[in-house]
Image (tube, rainbow, N blue to C red; front, side, top):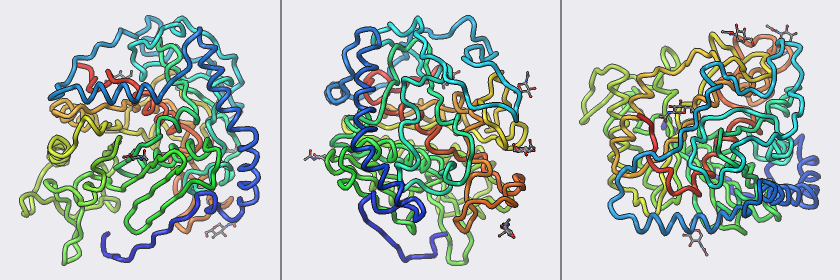
Length: 473
Ligand SMILES: *[C@@H]1O[C@H](CO)[C@@H](O)[C@H](O)[C@H]1NC(C)=O
Ligand SMILES: *[C@@H]1O[C@H](CO)[C@@H](O)[C@H](O)[C@H]1NC(C)=O
Ligand SMILES: *[C@@H]1O[C@H](CO)[C@@H](O)[C@H](O)[C@H]1NC(C)=O
Ligand SMILES: *[C@@H]1O[C@H](CO)[C@@H](O)[C@H](O)[C@H]1NC(C)=O
Ligand SMILES: *[C@@H]1O[C@H](CO)[C@@H](O)[C@H](O)[C@H]1NC(C)=O
């Protein structure tokens, strides 16, 4: 790590980076979209807003301005008590009772059958205070999922372009997350996303799961831009930096790779030190962004060959520490940096909760339906989750916790599994697909797919000034 100083930066029109085999289709899709799909997304969005019980159509721009003003008026921001209405439903006790579909035998399970978008009692709630992370997955044709087509997003990486890699089913693209009792909230499409991004810089910092989320947002925005020649992708492989820009909207969405948040450095003797009290210098480049979304987690649990560090370091000295103590120490370093360097009137800070894997007991291989009986063995150590939540609560800066773990846990169907690529960048061949133990990826997520929902929830909370530190308990 870090040995290679050469950087290869490519800057090009986003439309000009298709995978070779797709270029013709991508171009076709581009012009088609300009003519049809984008107009459809836009009008569908307006129709939906209008249909949802006589609401004013969403006005994200105004909402953002309100938020900015509200933040500017907030002197020393103190964590506000959560004021959300109770959203627990008596029928939902632990059995995941809210599923709109019956569980079907695996293997023969067809893609989810389209169900009519039902109106629910909550649909009439106006701008309700509610818990958007409590809800259910529904197939809702009217909501327009997927928000884009894989063929419409030429820079979509092979790792998560499941259809391109031969995944035959597509039901996993069509589920919409419907929060309980939140009215028309979270019914966002690409057109609204673009308006929310206007004159803004959104930054993702973290591991490859945050890159997965960055790709998702870049695709949502790209597919909605009317003139796609006015977009750019910068892909700096060596320094693990990516940026998507929509020039006509002065919108940029960036990703910085930093899987531990704290600094990982290769020493002169080639050992790798994880420096618990230092942050990577690149973090400074995020300052001034309007939105920063952090995550860390997976890399702290790696053992054996996957473990990325040889020793831990503090105050310039090697230290022995239990994994949890080290994780806590690193998060304190991060939290202090945020409190000292981020101006909350200018920057909204988010921390995305852990993205679940489906590797051992609940394996993603061959899964085409979400889990409907709600009994999954949580995979990530609970102690580490507690450490994240405690550190966020102790911060002076308001940090919104994107609490996506539970809603993602049931999406066992949404991973690339064997429809991913090899280290050489090629889709798995037939023989390899028959060796899922070696090749299946049950950690990242197919796109379009689940991370699109994470982004919808992110964008939704951008227009909510009250959703600052709202951890429960
Ligand atoms: C995250 O969301 C789940 C599901 O709504 C909820 O049970 C849990 O308490 C939430 N966690 C926090 C820290 O708010
Ligand atoms: C473009 O967006 C940046 C934030 O990324 C903002 O500071 C700048 O004022 C915007 N430019 C214009 C012309 O609005
Ligand atoms: C996975 O699905 C394939 C194709 O439907 C089938 O041939 C195979 O037996 C399944 N494997 C397992 C372990 O269920
Ligand atoms: C949940 O459903 C799966 C099949 O969809 C089944 O294998 C599992 O045993 C069920 N778990 C419980 C606790 O009912
Ligand atoms: C699949 O790839 C492996 C590893 O490169 C190779 O050994 C094998 O022959 C390939 N199988 C097919 C059917 O192409």
